[in-house]
Length: 119
Image (cartoon, rainbow, N blue to C red; front, side, top):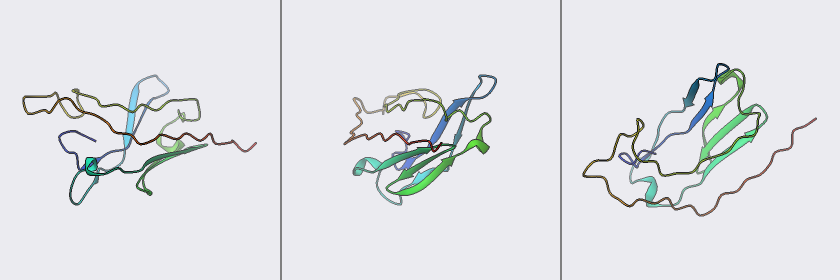
């Protein structure tokens, strides 16, 4: 989500390609018809299985990433998730005089389930 457009959310996978260069792939922006995502709690889900990662917002799949998106597939290895409130940079630009501080991220819970690879 961009702070300047709080009614839109984007799912993005960041990874390094086989040469070690940074790459990313995203879905289309998910835009609320009215209000902002901060008006209420929403359920954001990431479901990871062998050769597939899917993201959901409030139970609706909005993005998937499979080996066809990157070669080699970087996500069949251990990895981590970051939840943060980023400020500045290329995604939404640097803060200015109209930027409201402090900001916060309210998280009700985070759950992690380990999938079992069928052998």
